[in-house]
Amino acid sequence: MELLKKKIVEEGIVLSGQVLKVDAFLNHQIDPLLMLEIGKEFKRRFEGDPITKILTLESSGIAPSVMAGLEMNVPVVFGRKHKSLTLTDDLYVQSVYSYTKQQTNEVTVSRKFLSAEDRVLIIDDFLANGEAALGLANIVKKAGAQVAGIGIVIEKSFQPGADKLREAGYRVESLARIASLDNQKLQFVNEPAAEEDSHVQLV
Ligand code: G4P
Image (cartoon, rainbow, N blue to C red):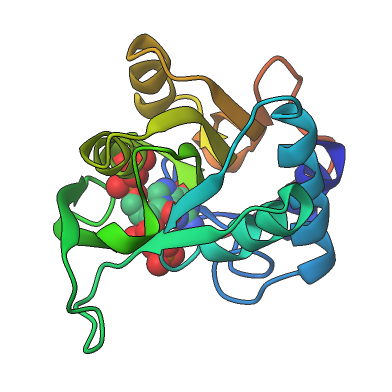
């Protein structure tokens, strides 16, 4: 998705060989027009698939998911990482370990919002090790529902998640695929290094 790649090149910050900071438009400040275009692109890619629901994880998965839900005319459910005061009904619970943050979250989704009739599109902002997406897919399975596919805004293809998910048989649609962040250079999959250097910040 060219608009997204342009945004990453212009406003992304390569923090290290592993981490890309995109808090100017996705992880902290949010660009609503870009999110709308992302929603349209997910709709285009999953056109014809009878998806009934989108499942994501708080917090950064919510903005692209809501726009996809708007375009596809389906509700959006987000897994919670923190206990909710009012979410007291029966829950699906799934442990999700983050290698990047080295912490485990107990992700919960109310049973009320996922059922065996659902065909679910999982959406997340980043794909690194695949743990979040696999955890969400497990919640879908616990509900007896089907996973239609996994939509990712930014895939770090040099980390194991994408291969892990595809090998597990899931359809993975990533809107931007990053081949490398080495030497403070951002390189997309199958393309030469971006002309315009992303802002470099060494940590
Ligand atoms: P995984 O789900 O693919 O296994 O990824 P991992 O656990 O390694 O990453 C977990 C968290 O780190 C996620 O945020 C993910 O968005 C974020 N993350 C991973 N790689 C990058 C990166 O290169 N840049 C940025 N900006 N974030 C990255 P989270 O804990 O769910 O936080 P949030 O959704 O509340 O923002």
